Image 1 (tube, rainbow, N blue to C red):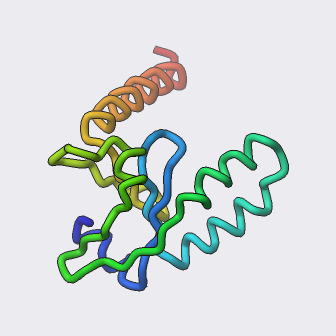
Image 2: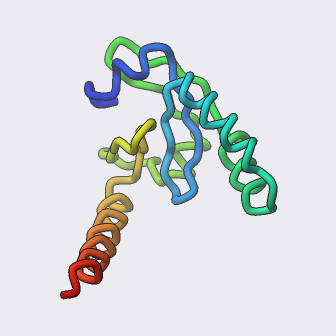
Length: 125
């Protein structure tokens, strides 16, 4: 994990699958809050499926002295991290996300285009 995230993860972290092929890394306490919020909203089939994805793959981890966490093979396969030498670790509010670097570049380009399109609509260009 990048040094900017390590202090937040000193008390342990939870790694789980994200809905877009990425891994989500929560500080342990934040994962408990996230889980409670998700449980309170889990009323429909879509929410139940999302809960199933997130909770069935959740793995409690502690960073080693170099700030590394051991990712389960299931997680590496899910996020397309097997056999790659570089990954993208990004911050997203209360969590970090781990992406296959190529997939992140594609996602980032799509986000940039969507943001630019939205801004053009807002300012009337």
